Every structure is written in structure tokens, then in C-alpha cells.
Image 1 (cartoon, rainbow, N blue to C red):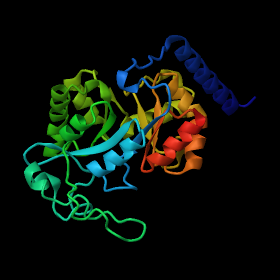
Image 2: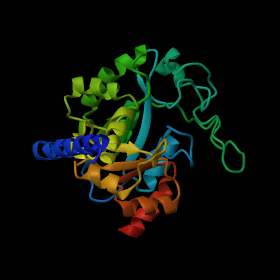
Image 3: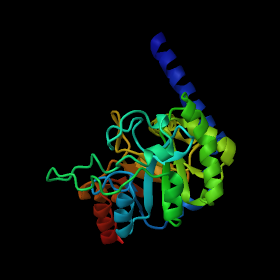
Length: 301
């Protein structure tokens, strides 16, 4: 046996020994149960109200999807000039309204004058919601209008911005005032934002994983050291793929489920994909087509 072979075997044996030692010592801690996630059947949340059927983040969209029997909504929030929390996806108002410029440059009162249905186009190329009175709405309005709905709240403003630095405390104060702590899930692409939010919430509110936490979990799952992973979020809201990595496998869902972390899939809009993910163990969906999702789930119930 050559010297290189002996070294390789020694290193390999050391790696196996290290793995075995961590298996004995490590005790992964499942996440405590949160009331907002206590559903027996798969959950359907309309994405921004169900943006395939009505202008996103409008009462028209929320009412249409509520009539379908969805469990709730997934919304994006931003902060206005007067530090009110509004439902809005983009940084600027151009793409969905007849206004232009940054959301943070307007007060809530000023934004209320925007036509939130201005840019919505149907399959025939018509604009059926223009000048129909649809307005930008605040998160407070949504919480009050739908007091029994589950709402996933995505903090869009970057933590490096002035608005982003204020958002965690502003959001916590609003949830306290409206008594909504146990029926919302707070998330952000920036894990730092949910960490900041928890400085105020003290883990009383369910949170979903940001980009870094998702990558960390997948790295642990795909290695031989998954038993060392302790989740820092109560839920994963993820697409089927993250870059080149598949997030939609039954084994990955099971890996997280064993830690009491359910998986809601985003960007799912066709029946075949709903079926496939339900069979793999998905706990819910955030979709532009809530009607399709409800039909599939009802067929499976």
C-alpha cells in the first residue's frame, strides 16, 4: 500500500469518526409549534390577492380570492413617506398605477389618489379595472377587513435603507395594535430583517426563512451533517428550484418536516405541479391562481 493511499484512508477514517461523533452528540431542536401554522390540510394563499384575476394588492383581488375559500393571502409591504405600511411590491409606483416615483416619496394620503387598477390587463388586452376606484391599501386595512385570514407578510424594503430600518418596529407595533400576532407569518429575503423583527416580537410571531437560511438548510440536507442543522425559522416559503438546486423533493420536505418546519411553495400556478407537490408533502401554496389550487386540494381531501 502506497503512502498516498494510507493518507487517504486515514483522512477518510477521520471524517467518518467525526461524523459518528456528531451523530452521538448533536440533538437537532425542532421548532416550537406556532398557532398561525396549525392547519391539518394544505394551505392556499393567494399571491398579492391572486394577481391573475384582478390588480395585485387591491380589495378587488382579495375579495375575489376570499370567495374561493382560500386560507389567506401573501402580501408585500413597503413604508410610505409618513411611515405608514402599505401593500406594494415594487419600489416605484410605475408598474401597477398611474403614478410614478418611489413609494417612500409619497404619503399614504397621496398614494390613495393613485389608480391601483390602472395597469391591469386581461387576456383580451382590455383594462377592466381602470378608473374603477381601486386604491393602494394599507396593511392595517387588510388586517381589519379580513380578521380571520392567515397573512404572510413580506418585508420588501432592504435593511440598508431608511424605510427598511424602521419597518421591523413599525410592523410589530401594528400587529400588537390589531391583535394579529397569531395569524400572520413575517418573512423577508433578508434574514437580517426577520432577526430585527424578532428583537421586538420575541418569537411570538411565526417567521419564514430568508435566502441565507434556505441555502443553509439545503447545504445541511445535502451533506452528511444534516443532523447538525437547527432551523431559525418556522416556515419555508420557497420556489421549486433555487438556482440549480431542486427544492421540491419529498426527501427535502421530510427533512424540514421532521424539524417541525412546513414548506409552502411559491410560483406554482398549474394543476400538474400542485398535484406533484401535494404528493411530495407540501404543506401549502402561494399562488397567482388560487382557484386551481383550491380545486386540486379539494379533490385530494
